[in-house]
Image (cartoon, rainbow, N blue to C red; front, side):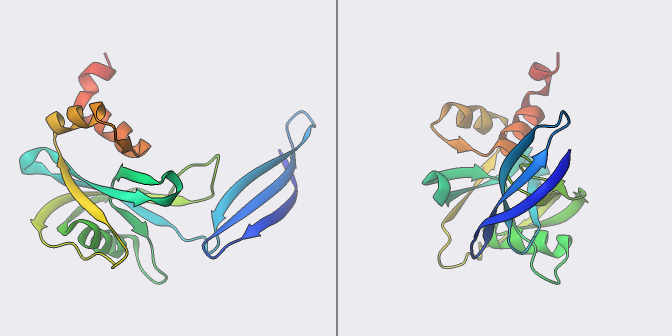
Length: 180
């Protein structure tokens, strides 16, 4: 693969839309379009676990592109001069009211490599304390604890469940049915 040209098609306040002309491995010239954050900001995706209840903390948040509520893990952008760990602590408290102990943070990973250059860190957090959400005035986020029985119910409901959530919870709660 050889990149021939990179062209910015749209520069928005938060996102840029880009076209790259490239030569593929057999000599064909092609174009590929994708998006990137205009500040190349990374994000954290938080996987909060309440050990005593064998349950995960999820959020339900309205997302404009879908014009609907999406079931997600808490997440957020890493602010300038902020570490991944401090972002995890801040976003978990803001979006859910929960606090916890960070067990592990992954290295940065591509979120949707066929569509965007965005990279995220996955943070596994053991919940230690419940408090009050600290939402921005424009945010509408509801919090839900999800154990195995609730997960099975959610899959039958008319809900949009983010792919990472679906993959993670299905594997966690039903690994004996998936990997025979």
